[in-house]
Image: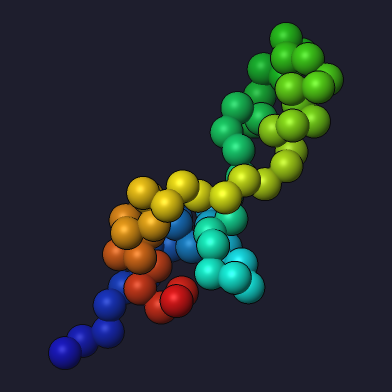
Length: 66
């Protein structure tokens, strides 16, 4: 059976933590930042954890990450 391919777009956006959770960055911090408050921009800098209901999709996109 041939090797499975990793979705490179997903590999660049997600990282697996030591405990097996998946880390992601928040959206809405790329442009049009002047209208957003300092507090909101500061919160968008923080990484978040992918919700457990989306993990199955990520396991398909990142077959060798686990």
